[in-house]
Image (cartoon, rainbow, N blue to C red; front, top):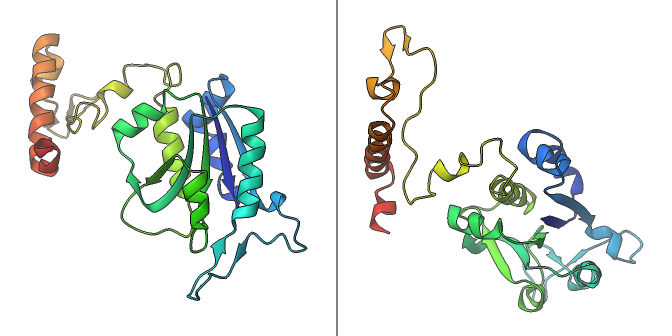
Length: 225
């Protein structure tokens, strides 16, 4: 997979890709991530990529021209499955969406900033709009990082144990069950005996039951869906 991220503040993005799972995915050659500074696509003296709104109002708007130049250049070099815009009014990111995007080959992620982007960008270039929640951030960069992490970890070969991602919360519409590790008895706080019994079918049955109970208690809306 190749991910191209368009941003006005690339310095916000780089360090998370230099550690942990995202760094290993790049080192293995499973993912290629490129950052594109939108200011490189403007000819203005001060590298301006925003301007006042038509009709007045508070907040600056990202201009269409530099975004057009950047996206058009990228699309002239390869085909893209999705051109994604991170925006609070997009479709809320969930596990199903992450699963679907992990199967794509090449994607572009445009990070909004200031008041947002000229609507014509959304009308003519964007194929998918994604939100990470009902709140507003200073820009789309942190949302893009969350999206990348959620997607990259699902790519075969990224995790040491590929079945690990399949047992995460939300993969089967339920929250994950409680998990434990050694020691089995710590300060009198004991691990449920079923988990140390060695009876795999019974363990799986217990986990399914606990996943259902936890979901019913914490996210009953998932059961309704």
